[in-house]
Image (cartoon, rainbow over all chains, first blue to last red; front, side, top):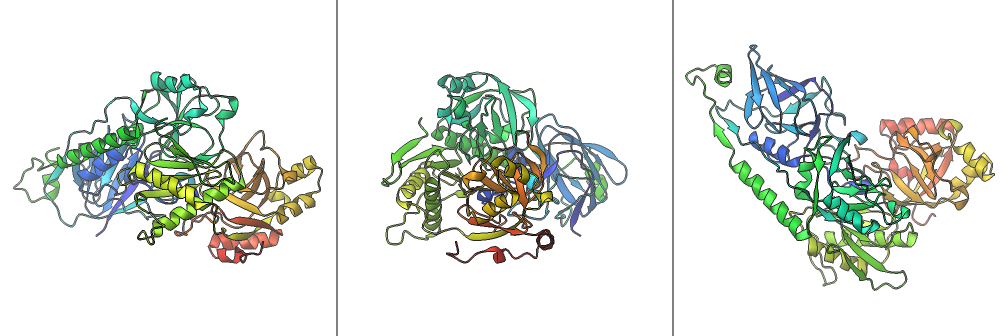
Length: 338
Length: 273
């Protein structure tokens, strides 16, 4: 029987995402995909998935889910935990960074986040329809996910069911992003700003404001001065997630996964790809610092990050939940140690 | 800046400077100028075509195409005045890709082939055109005269952006130019034909917007179910508007929503312009 997960309560802003939708930006289609691709890859690795499997991105308060049919292994990555209610009524805490196997009728209620986003991966990935090359939800154009929308109560999420019960789970250390300054490459329009403004960007505090969504986040700090009032506007050119746009008020906006494909504000700098996942963890009120790096340093940083992820995945340890091993009752094997 | 290279192109019919700008470590923007200008856009399309040709060439052929360095490209986005080439930094060698793009920009010239030529129906009835009377009054024209001017002009698609399928089009006759509304609408109906400054566009989706609404087309501008070409229009296409009455509009709108409207029926034969 195939796996099927029912959304009992979608809560708000939780969506199906994978690593993004490429090849259509010339038609105005955003890349979308997970804000923190590193944590999504961790969650997928914990259930034995490839990195590009679709998972659930949790943005504030996680959804309540119920397995309708099949048996699925799930894992959470991020600063979040869940409550697991077995079909027989037993309740357990299900922490992040470990996998668990759910049977039909088991329920999972995911709590509220500490960080900016977290991920629930499902063995085999969520098999919602691929639209324009990706399962990522792009709400603005109603593409991907289920009907192009974030999770809503009543959604049914298809997934692969485990063929047989496997008596081990996986666990790993929490991924740590670090708190070093966010690395940027200057430009492409740093020449539209007074020289001191580039220094201001690199030497001042910028606070994350409440005006943030999957398209971008507005920062607040020392205003960045354009060379002239006219240089606050450019004839629109290509933009990308990570680009730091500065409109006339001088307060920077960092574009994120759902950002539009072209934009008319000058971009003083662009966050390097190695640090993009960290932006997904920011919350209003947090203070950001930026540091400028060269193209070579950006490449080095990316290779180092990839090596860290590879090492993290390699260190995932299978373990056998300390169960009454003589017992043949699946449910007891999997629950008595919680 | 260390990330920016500039070079003069061989072309001397323009001012000619091509700039290669790093958009972080995942994209290059090849910039031909800073204005909205058909000649600049022709060069953007020229590079777009040359890049596509080079990427499709399996081998270096007779030595005239060098596609080395082009690996890892994930998106190619033409705009008014530049081409942004997004790449996978784990696959591409950014430096080699940038050099290859500059070489292509230098040799590509302007577009060798024209985009498609569309005739797209638009209903200019009052209910679809809330700003048409104001525009006519401001320009001292009759309503019918504005419709006639809009229906006779040929518009060029500079780029698709802002939202999926949204075409930024030049070619608006100067007599109709008018700045955008001082107070944007909270909800512009989907498929509204709109103008702002010297630009013309169609909103593919209901969205907030400050452009002036002159009519509505029954033709979907974006169809996510069309995997090959979800956007009706592409950079380089040309468009003329065909005025239709309300009954025809409703008929075509129903066909559009049912997915039975044949896009090809909107294409004009080559050279019809």
